[in-house]
Image (cartoon, rainbow, N blue to C red):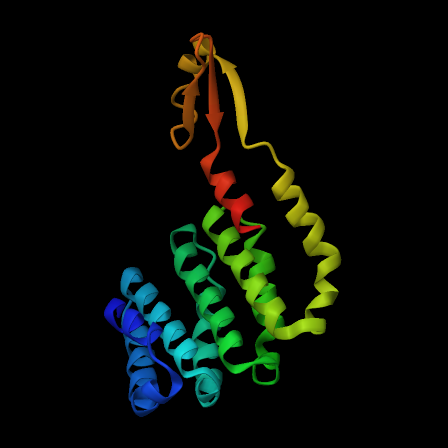
Length: 207
C-alpha cells in the first residue's frame, strides 16, 4: 500500500486512468478484509493518493469510498484515532480531487467528524482536523463560511496558548516523571528548566 501511495502521488489523471477501476476495487477490498490497523491506515492513504492522482475521474468511486471512510471516521477508541484521522484526511483529499459539486453530499459529515475530533485529547486528531479544514475551505468556498464563527476563535485560542513553562531546577527534578513527552532546556545559570510542550507546538503549527 505504501508503494502504491508513493506511485499514485506521482501520476497524472491520464496515467492512473487505465489502473483506476481495479486499483480502487482492490484497495477497498483490502480495507474491508483486514483488521490490522497499520494495513488499514496505509490502504486509506493509498486511496487518498489515488483520488488526488485521478482528480475528477475519481467521482464515480466517491460514494463507495466515502461510505468506507464514514465508518472509520466514527471510531472513538483512542487506539484507533490515527486511523480515524487518516480517513478524515482521505475525505479532504477526495474533496480536492473531485470538486465542490461532487463532494457536497459528504461535506457536512466530514466537517462533523473534523469538529468532533477537536473535542478529543488527541494532538493527532487535531492536526488531521486542521488539515481537513484547510482542504474543505479551498473546495467549498462560501459554503464553508458558516463554520467560521466557531472555528476561527478556536484556532486563535490554540495559537495563543503558551507552549513553554519555566520551573526551578529542583522543582523540575521532583516532577521529572510528570512530563515525559516534553522537551526540557536548562538556562545558563542552572537554576531553571524550561518545559516545552511539543505536542502543543504541533497543534499550533497545524492551526
